[in-house]
Length: 259
Image (cartoon, rainbow, N blue to C red; front, side, top):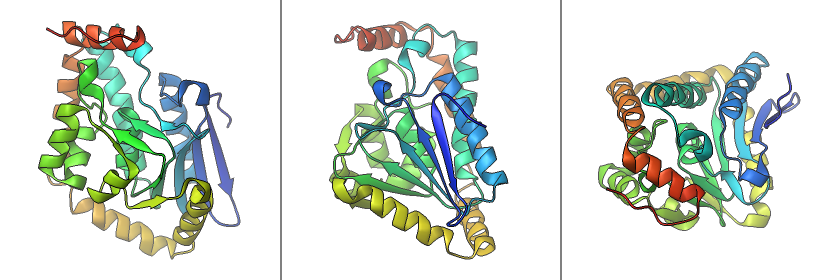
């Protein structure tokens, strides 16, 4: 299967599958079509027996700069709920993929892009990477798992600061707080991703799958309920003044005038 906005490359020799969001002129922002394509590519990679999966963005400016704000700006609450459900399905599919997944964060990873990275097992950042849950400045909150997965990764206080303030942090700070596991020189980034993915794919597949299921199970106690709450809270913000104003201000490149 082929798609207009993503590429799926499966190396049969190594067992590594790579999904690349291929919209560099839009900083790899996620449209509905792109999310649906990622969902299909994940299923195809699983069916092909991938032993490791890399999620990447095309170009060297962005991993995924976020969701498509021009699409979201006029969404009604039911439409926003459907969009949240789609984003959650994709993030959940990444999290439950039966082999280890690596987010190759080269450049910007904001909003929904950060949330897809959070759903991966491992996160590797290039030195030039900048990461943030920036939704608050659009009059909304993280809606694809960020309110749940972020705090589990970096702790409650740090997660609250990132979400409340919409902070954008560099790769060094992201590593210091545990948001990414490794920072790599820009010029060596692609080689390191290949090396790590190859090493993961070379491990015993059934044991790796069992290890992932056990590790995921250790944190699943209240996550499902939390994710459901997040979907309702996120979609309920659509149609409010602050959501409309935040997104219009972004598209118009001006400061928002929130209530």
